[in-house]
Length: 339
Image 1 (cartoon, rainbow, N blue to C red):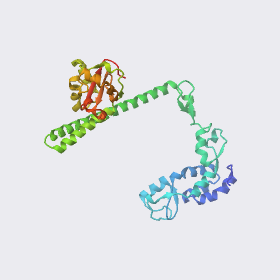
Image 2: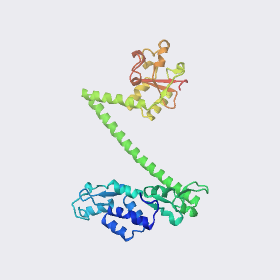
Image 3: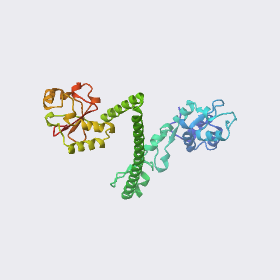
Image 4: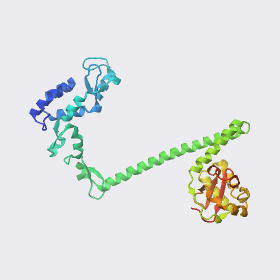
């Protein structure tokens, strides 16, 4: 077992094995000052698992930064000139990591009054929580509630720090708005290109049956995707349906559909289907509507945002009888009764 307390004698006992595993450069440095606690700490910090690499053939170990810098100039081992590349380097043996982890050391904050002695593998955690750590985060109790390093509390000014925080947040907000604007421009450009492509396909489908089928499927898919963005609606009073809406009411509904990205190729057809003269046989008169009233609750309705109106789209209601649906769907406007 290694000693639980660092002293000149204990370091003399534990360092020989430790030094035998280190590279010659670090070993020589340590031998010149073997009674110094800082040598052990420095060695441990340099030999963190992620920062220590070993040559595969000669098994010499080096700091990651140093050996990579050396290999960039000369692809050989610095000690015996064995050819080596960065890709061939591997992690050091577990024995070295375990040896370092078991050594005990005094806290770095001993000069500030901390007398704790801890194992090296616990040093980082202790330093974060050490009450003598001058950089330990502290909560400001003067009113701003910001987290401030302990050694900066005496010079801390709440107003200044809050002003700096506000300026930082405003800058981040401005950057986000600028980035959002740039992304919106890209989206608009993509939409324009898509619309041009769709127009081109519509022109082609007149003479090309294959293109006609593709274009029709794309338009149906557009309606399905748009329908998925609309909230479900529940009609509580079907008697409030307006079967012959006037032109002003139709214009308001059409404007709302356009604002909420209704696919352009169906918006006119939908608005034509908001009047009973375009409704299917089961809805085109007061008498047939009364006879079909029991089937109303089977409709899947989507809310026209902000309006007392619903969309009954064909893609959502393929389960309904043919005399209760038309393509691409129905617009039903109500005086009241929409949830």
